[in-house]
Length: 136
Image (tube, rainbow, N blue to C red; front, side, top):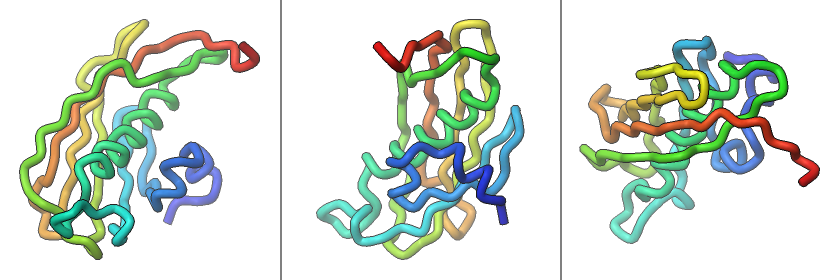
């Protein structure tokens, strides 16, 4: 189980969704989520936006832990392929790995896995590296 320091890498929004970090390294971020009724769509399965938020949170953590002092990151682009539904009550896992690590952009691929090990979605996102003055 990750320690509380690792969980502090998540901003409030993904933490409030229930996302938990399981493994963190510069080339792999693994997270999980116990799906709840609040994550559902009108068909009673996990909402696509909730799946995207899950993957975006893991990609943001992956990009952030690869930054230098004084840098920040933001999602520049995100593409999702939905492959299979996720039932409410399922514990999903996301594996986020780099496809490209450049000076100004990084590209991450997150595979969202159902409990049966089958991929439910594949999300590819580009993170922009920037120097951001939070006071502005």
